[in-house]
Amino acid sequence: MQKRAERSPADTVADVLRPSHRRADSRLSQRAGAHTLELTGVGEEAWIEVVQTMDAVYADLVHHQVELERKNAALEEAQQFIGSVVAAMTDVLIVCDRHGRIERANAALEQLTGCSETELIDVPLQTIFSQQSRPLIARLTDGSHAGLAIADQEVGLIDMNGHPTPLAINCSSRFDHKGALVGWVLIGRPVGELRRAYESLNRTHRELTQAQQQLVLSEKMAALGRLVAGVAHELNNPISFVFGNMHALKRYGERLTTYLQAIDRGESAEALQKLRAKLKINRVLADITPLVEGTLEGAERVSEIVQDLRRFSSTQSELADTFDLGRVIRTAVSWVVKACRTKPVIELKLPEPFDVVGRKGPVHQIIVNLVQNAIDVMGDSEEPRVVIEGRVEEAEVAVVVRDFGPGIAPEALQRIFEPFFTTKKIGEGTGLGLYVSYGLAEELGGKLEAHNHPDGGAVFTLRLPLQERGQDA
Image (cartoon, rainbow, N blue to C red; front, side, top):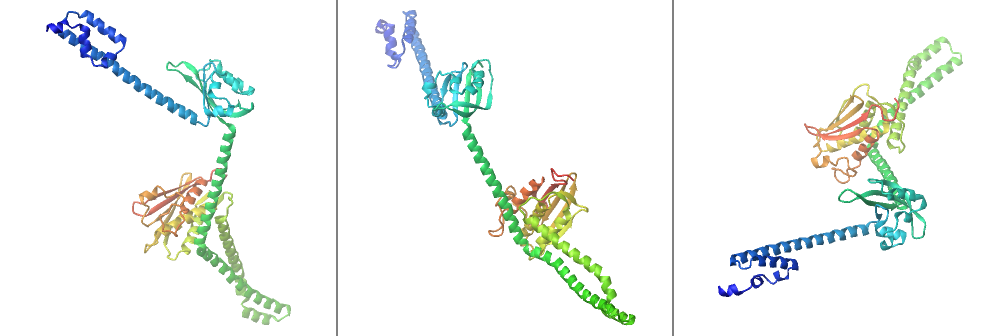
């Protein structure tokens, strides 16, 4: 114990501390010396407490040092990230202080002006813009517009050749952590680039519109190809009726000619009476008017079918007019059914009258597509059946087409109106019928909906306004 007492307090601390402890800064040494002076002559427990205090102080110092290094690393990483983002920007970036002097610029500004960022630092912001643009820029530099924001303003930036380059800029105020105004951030893009982008977008839009029109026409032609047999049958009936009537009129004309010639020859009344009975002139006279009316009716029916075909296949938009929606539905159903090998049972529940104001052609095409789709999904059914119901609901009409097939799978229900999506086998469908119908319904101011019926089968509902938007009754 005597030996321990002979050692100085400084020696005791030095023996206990690790080598790393001895590298502490001078302030820590002074603090330790002060503790040593106060505790001179005190017992061993006091010195142990001194050592523990020194360890705690040093550990705290090391902790703060590690935390400081971590924050410095994070700050350097953030600085590198911001620098890489700024360098990668294709738009012009200018950061200036509240007096309008440039504090930072990116590579896009360097490329336009031909000056490096070092050369641009502390340069007044107005000097890099044209004379016409400086009044706008001056509004920023007077320091009285805290919160000022400029959106999509066109200014002239002086390029490396001394010419103003049109620039669309956006400007926002910059604040410090206390909310005080410290400057502004300007982001700009050359107007020529914007114009090129707009022209490219406009060109793409035109191409898409043209492609959509071609898709609509292609689907029309595909549907018409499927309906050729039905359309031919529709035309055959009135044409046959016209032909039959015309042959009868020809025979009646020959009889009337023979009778009139006998009158011209001055035949006797008795001879004329016998000839009249032989030629059945009274019957001919009674039949002429119905035959002519029937022929006209058949010709009008042929004309209507031809007009329907023209509207169905035409690429031109027809004018809106009042038409009988029930007749359009019946015509569309007739076309589809007569082209089918297996004739389905069609139940029509249509109100009378069922008139709407709009364009008949697109409505006809939608109904054709819906009925054709309903019949196709029941291809394996022994007794295919389609129910078509029409309703008037306030300012719109609804045409509901229900089939009795397997229904629509849940995963397909979300995509049923997408282009080229089809659940049919390869070669049996283009996947455009419902897509085109959906677009036509929206074009008419209505909508097309699809869901499964609780008792089985799929239900498609076409909703149309009683009067198409923008059209007078």
